[in-house]
Amino acid sequence: MVKTKMAKWTEDPDIRAAFDWFVDIVGADSWSERKDAIKGHIGEIFKPKMLMGDLTSPKSRVVYEGDQFAWYLYLAEAYLCHIEDYEFAQGARVIPLFKILGQHLNLLKLVNGVRERAQRIATSDRRNPDGGLFELLVALIYKRNGMDSVSFVPETPTSPTPDIKVKNSTEEYYVECKRMSKSSDYSLEEREKWLRIAQPLQEYICIRKRPLVVDIVFHVELRSLENNFVRSELISKLEFVCCPCVLIDNEVWTVTVDFVDYKRIDERMSKVDVKLASSSLSELVTGKYEPYRGQRVMCLVDRSGINDTYVSKIHFAAATTWSCDAENAKQAKARDIRRRLAAALKQLPDAKPGIVHIGLESHDGMSIEKERYARIVNTVRQFDARGKDLDWIYCHIFDPRVPPDKNWDFGETVYYFGRNNPLSEPLKRMSVALPDDAEVHDGASWL
Image (cartoon, rainbow, N blue to C red):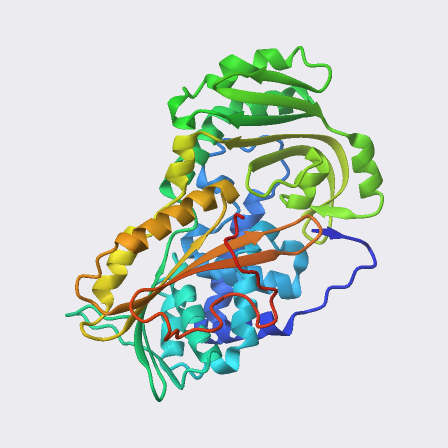
């Protein structure tokens, strides 16, 4: 997320292998058309401006939601060929997956039906490719574990079918994969609410050119607040802030205010340019790296780079950081797997050993993961398999992050449960998204 004039980018051969394979499946002409649509969208997002209109509008989001698989390909190509167009926060969810697929591409190609499944991801599932990519990763992990045969099961219009069939000389399993959405409905609604109530605050900061770092922790659910809450309860008080302070601290929220340290910024930027809309820029302005909290940086800058996506000089900066520690909010964000598990069970055949893999992402911090783990354990203990031979359940918790000093940092926690014969474990290597030499620790991620 930072660059110097002497820096040279080195291409990653694993990511290249996966990217080229997917483009071959999509077709060069189709990929070119889809890429041009994304470029137009990105160009609008990064036009120089201080105020971005309605912050809740899809037009204010970097993600290209109309064709998310093409967006993933765009991120991979940018990472490989034109790093100045690469979006680090978005790429942290995608690039590690492309890397593991490319690293084991020869094994992946041995999976029966894999090209057809990838074709579906690139076409009919293009708006929501995460489930299909998860299926590729799960199929691959069985090959990485030495299964003789791994096959995608063709879908039939008349009866439910599992995703994958795996077997060797002594074992045979039917495998169903369920990928939960990136964020819970509650998290999305909470973020939307924040954007609505915070817009007057951010407009005030920009119009008045106040170099403030405003940190807010809500102690109640945001949906309980009126849309004008921040405008009526905070903005007038900011007029009197002349030094760092805890401005408000009550049962509703805690508001801490600091000032941007331009000396620190100038010292850092005398050596490097910083990527727009990155954790490096956020850390530079706020002085903190807080991956599980919401942040927005507002600044007037001199731009650099081929497409003006890096900052060479900051003339004005401010930021807002927010989170919510209300107990009801924590419980709502810690999504359970019960519904996905029940849906997966319906896809498994009768009287055949079955395995379910469930994938989800962690974006809300360790306190949420602790609550989630308790819910998952309770669900598995109480779950009624309704006569199905459900042998194993694997829950893959993905944790994509972008530390200011790295291109990406990707963790995976696997919760696994043997229901019938725990001595006959089909997977010795359980992580689907991490390389073979990844550092592994026992215990839950939140400990």
